[in-house]
Image 1 (cartoon, helix red, strand yellow):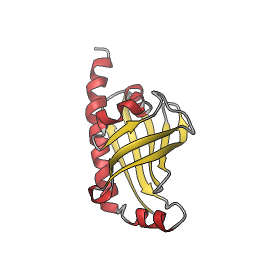
Image 2 (cartoon, helix red, strand yellow):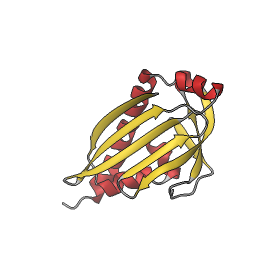
Image 3 (spheres, helix red, strand yellow):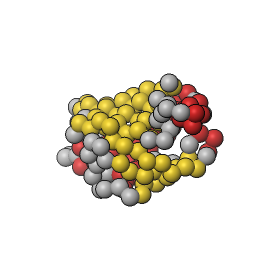
Image 4 (cartoon, rainbow, N blue to C red):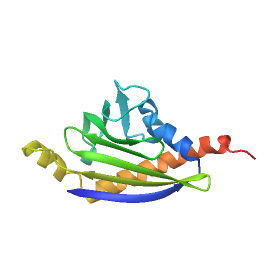
Length: 151
């Protein structure tokens, strides 16, 4: 199993950050590597959605992700049902801003294909994906958060 964990301070309230994480139709606003198809506008534990994007080595893929963990305004974990790739978010209020912890990793699904797909999700790929994802979320939520804050 390979994983990467990274933290970031996002200059926006938890509510603004959560609104971006819980709405699959908005994923592409903060993560230009993915597009979502066939998902509800609000996700719940057990919800499945199809993501189209590029994996390791720029390989395009469309796969099904399932919401495994969901704690309103606090935690969300999505897992690819084909490769075992996951993203696990924890959010904490930080005096009006948001402390975000993101773990990305792979827990291979059974079989040779799962092992092969897991092997190409290297630490470098996971680190780069986490940095890009947090930067995008920080950019978009920060823009929204600035307008939501009282003066």
